[in-house]
Image (cartoon, rainbow, N blue to C red):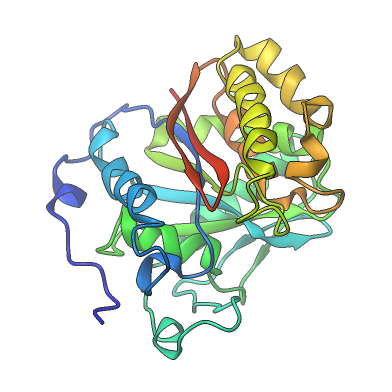
Length: 284
């Protein structure tokens, strides 16, 4: 089967515009390399793939760079990739051999990584640049669909291992100014992530009720949104949707929300996949 996504014209549909403020996103990145392999049913990931492919057309300009927060990189402090040409980390297991040959040769941006670390430090958050770290699948799998030419510089941003909601909202707030410099900030995870729940119809109403709460929180005025997301564990079925210590796939949403500042949030994609409700959100 063809494991590469054809080049899409929408990646060059718009030229960069001076002063174009970028939105921020929280996107589901699927299951491992799910978009590049056979699945059963065969159309399981089609709608999510179509959503990701369409994101570039919704932007005010072609991004100058991307900062992506992945649910697959946790460190004791915030860290950013500083490699000029980051390698790929195939951090998924048991998938077909061809999925370990996928490529995404996007350049890094060491200067932006350093600047981002400085912004975090100025906000009282410890941060460091990692010059060796590559891109994990929470980054390169969705970006292969969103920006398949792999020409836009990307830095990946870790979560902090304590997964503290307030710290990650503050981290996003520290990065908000980058949006006015043509930088697209993306949180990459899953709005539902309980491995025992996928494929179990008992989790359909559980995930839907949590998703309804999450949508209302995202769409609330900025100050209320921050308060709700900071206390996300109080949401209905929160710990059934994101088990204790396993919320690393939700926390990237908090970084994206923090970086949004006062911009309104809204749900831009949702469907039932493997018996659970999965959604994406945009701010601005």
